[in-house]
Length: 358
Image 1 (cartoon, helix red, strand yellow):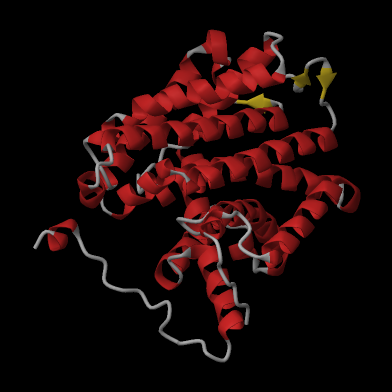
Image 2 (cartoon, rainbow, N blue to C red):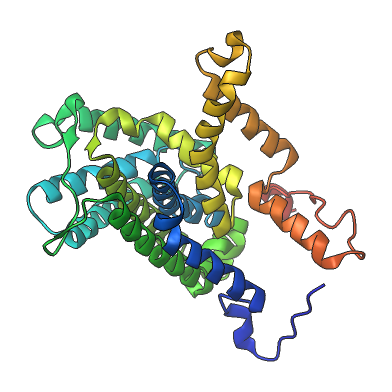
């Protein structure tokens, strides 16, 4: 059992709460830095995709997990960033400028989408974001002079002020640096007054408004930051694939992103990374187990969607806090043994707004 004695108010907002955090995160960083020399090229490519999806997951986690805004059209922001990066890179602009433009344009689009969030919420906001995603996908397909239409568009390797990152190892380190920077930015944002305002809006809009929080401003800001991160992830995604087309940013991609944060664990930064690992690892596991299944099941179309749906239902019913919630319970059990109480994490009644006003 670990005892953490707090003697300073600054300890409450430190990123590393104790020496164990410093040790394990340092060990993880050492592994990530040494990964190109430790694992095969194929698995390094999969690790790169995990980092890219983790950035998009952090953006959606900020919106859905910490602000409580529902979005089922997040692939549209991913596509805006990807096409912006492709256009500016093919025009000869350096990678940092193109990446900044991808993030800013995606944020601007996010502000436009965030405006309906001021009047609708819940499933109605989800419907609005789905409609937006369909519109954006159609724009990608019809604006052939810029996007190449359904034929898609190729993108050059990232050029970092004359240094072309053409190898998989170089691009991996680029994604690693951006992912670490984004993660630290999100952690510091959540510790600030803005992050606490996001959480207050998620918990109760009425209570947040009564405390002086401007709902319209913070909801729009949350959409903008979330869209900007999705745009940055889309830019890296385009460079990794070196080819993009409208069908890569359809409703299925949006559902995958939402599935990623739900299974990873809503309301936790760790959940974005665990969800990204799940999203990349699950197709690999399904492909490896197909040979051991009967032909009727293993060769059936839609097997992956069936497995995703079953896993999602299982987590919603059995573990609403996702993978991180399950790990948190296991860790708490080990840390408090033998004083662990069985009903420690029992879900309490969730009150509706009408109940709060009675």
